[in-house]
Amino acid sequence: MTTTVWLTIGATLLCGVLAVLGVHAWSTGRARHEALIERLDRTGPAEAPGGRRRRFRGVDRRLRRTRLGRWITLRLAVTGLDLTPGEFFVGTAAATGGLWILAHVLFAPFFGPIAGLLAVWGAFGFLDWQRNKRIEKFINQLPELSRILANATQAGLALRTALSMAAEELDAPAGEELARVSDQLAVGHSVETALGELAERLPSRELVVLVTTLVLSNRAGGTVVGSLRNLTETLEERKETRREVRTQLSQVNLTAYAVPAMGLAALLLLDRVLPGAIDRMTDSFLGQAAVVVALVLYGLGVFVIRRLSKIDV
Image 1 (cartoon, rainbow, N blue to C red):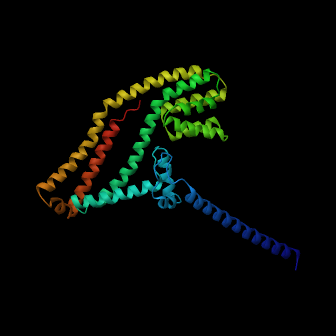
Image 2: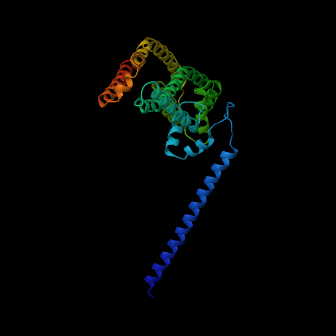
Image 3: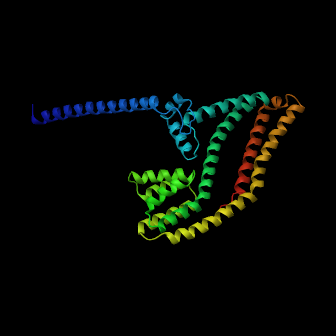
């Protein structure tokens, strides 16, 4: 045989050996990963830090391995809720089933799937509401945070030390978020990266201004006392303005949800006055189409009212 044939055979054998070694290394690593997860599940804390016992641990363990579970985990991480993905998933499923049955009994079988979809939408809407609520609380703490950073910087402390001190003195959510920033700085992350991730988790104009001020001052190496003092006063004024705007728009926001509630009450009243009216209405295609159109119009009305009453300060 020629030299080319021997080289071809040798290269083929080498590739085969490397492929076998690669598959063996991949399977071994995967087995170790699975064993580590199982060991953590068995030896991990059965109770939450606040003392609450975790439930549905098996569901939570399986759910975290899926794309849906990872997405729910990310949504829960920015809300500050003491819930696991498994608990949220089981709670949402139970609420969906309960509302489905309730709508089936009170109204008609046609309303069961609609109530189930509304339950799922309401569960994730609740997460968005908690996230916005957490952002609002954090914004209200920004003047105090800016004041602490200004005092610490004026005393000669480094920005990393000032952030750690603020994390210890402030309550949640600012204390928790700054503690996460301090942990990232402790393991080698830059100030710009850690504060940038904070701004992504809790997006707001006020926080972006504060982060930009801190990053630029840290990059340029100048003093930030004067900038933080001025920023503290500005944040206090914006805080009061936001509070006044929210008070003025509270009646409008209440109207946005009161109108659909009145429509639902009218539907229940109609079924009580004329028993079986909803069943007869949803038996035909035209009745079902009318119900769907009415629900879409109610939803569109809520959306339009919310958009018109949304004022960015």
